[in-house]
Length: 97
Image (tube, rainbow, N blue to C red; front, side):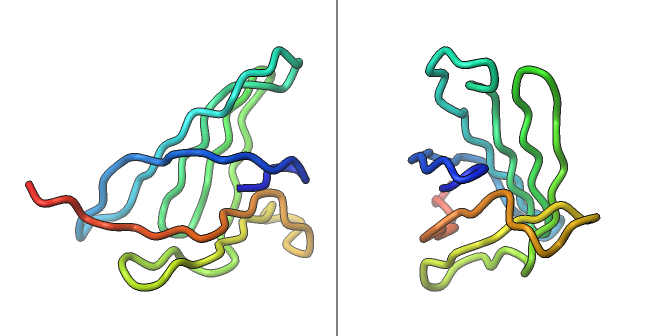
């Protein structure tokens, strides 16, 4: 995943059903002012919460459930030409209950 040009590896966990998709990952805390927090992915949006605030992003394309790994880009709705968050190789799989 890349957030504001900073690459990192995250493990997302969550749930999806007919009503939607919600995956959450903790951001690493390296001690900087903007380090730490969470990323929440939904089918057509992402929310990044870090010290100092929260930002809501829109997906360029809705997340696909199942299938091959996909790259998903998230942008500011008011500035869609600039990618803020990229998730690379995302695969959403269901675990058997």
